Structure formats: C-alpha cells, structure tokens
Length: 98
Image 1 (tube, rainbow, N blue to C red):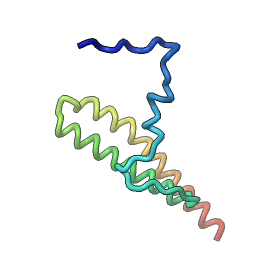
Image 2 (cartoon, rainbow, N blue to C red):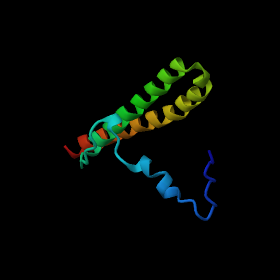
Image 3 (tube, rainbow, N blue to C red):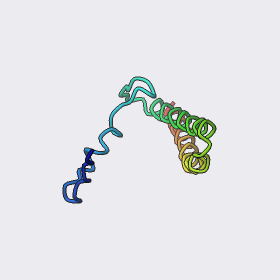
Image 4 (cartoon, rainbow, N blue to C red):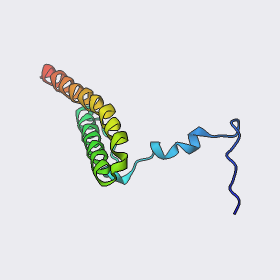
C-alpha cells in the first residue's frame, strides 16, 4: 500500500484544511445568529465551560493525555475569565441605558 506524499508548500491550501473549524457543529447545539450581544457572550461562555469539562473528562479517561489536557485547561481558563468580564461589562452597559 502506497501512501500519498504531503503536498508541496506552494500546493497546500490551509483554508481548505481548516474549513471544519469555521462550520457550525452540533456539539454545542443548533447555531443561531442573534443580535443579542449579551446572549451571544453567555452562549460562548457556556461553550468554553463545556470544552473545559470535555478536556478534564478526556484527561481522566485517557490518562496519558493528562499533562496535555492540563495545559489546555490552563490556557482556556483565562479566556473563560475574560468572557465573564465581558458579560459583566455588557450588563453594566445595558443597565446604564435604562
């Protein structure tokens, strides 16, 4: 069985290879576009928390991934905290309008 050689650097289409990242996935439920900025931020926060839980679960299930998943969790935690701050800021802006 012959293996296909990787494409030459000039032939590599990074957009095609990464196109799956830009598509809605069912893992987080139906993708719904909304002008509700606070709702969007809260949904993103929920997605990040869910991802953190998956990472921890994977580390327990596949113990050889423990260090890598711990690193991933350490990287995602500041993002979660930034999302929480953004949500608090949006709530402050909304209450200032009232």
